Each structure stands twice: as structure tokens, then as C-alpha cells.
Length: 51
Image: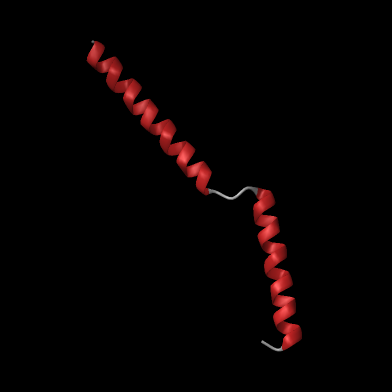
């Protein structure tokens, strides 16, 4: 009985750790907008200089 409960707790902790790791790897909407603006500025600069 105790072994089953410990197994369930262990699996839940591993799942929570996996979710937290996955979320830490994702960009926030603000970071995505900043990257888009930066990329657009770079593209405009490249077009202006002929690269």
C-alpha cells in the first residue's frame, strides 16, 4: 500500500518537473514580439545596405 502511494507521488513529482522544464524553454509572448521586431529591423537594415 505505501509502495503504491510513494510510486504515485514520485511519478507526480517527475511530471511536475518535466512541465516546469518545458515551460522554462518556451519564450514568453513579449520575448516573441521582441524577436520579431529585432528581426524586422535587421531585415530592413539588410535591404537598405543591399545585403
